[in-house]
Image (cartoon, rainbow, N blue to C red; front, side, top):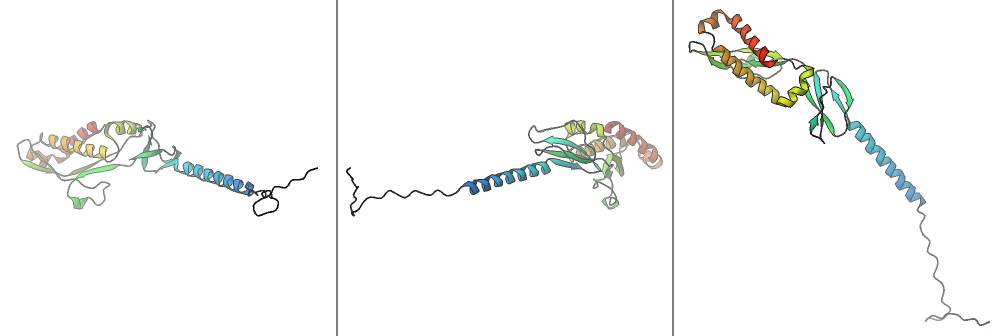
Length: 200
């Protein structure tokens, strides 16, 4: 038998390189897997929490989708609901809302801030300042129709105020200055009837 030994420059036999020891990754992989599961669970919890919407006892609400940019026709009464993380409630007051035209010092007990006193003319051409207040309440079955026609608060409320100004200043021209002094209740009831017809 012939024995040959590989030689290297420094002399002596060449040694085979030592085997490289790879680090143990079983623990690393399991830690990563656990972190991924925890992160996914936290994300689900956040999505679940933000998917809820609440409506107060004094409110109605419509479910608005940020994806489709549309509202559901259903009106939501007070309560807590699952509506999805990309949705939110557009809210409307269930309680009476006041519109008042009068001296601002008289309005501390009213829901809405006051508007300027109405100025109109009587049938005989005299200036008249009208001070009055009235209240309206949104019907739950009409909330979707209101939103689609006039928009959310305060858009529809501003339209209501302008509507009342037009109607009341026009109605005042049907009465004489003397009637405003002697038949104030009659004029008030007539104006109330006109407002009811318009707001309905």
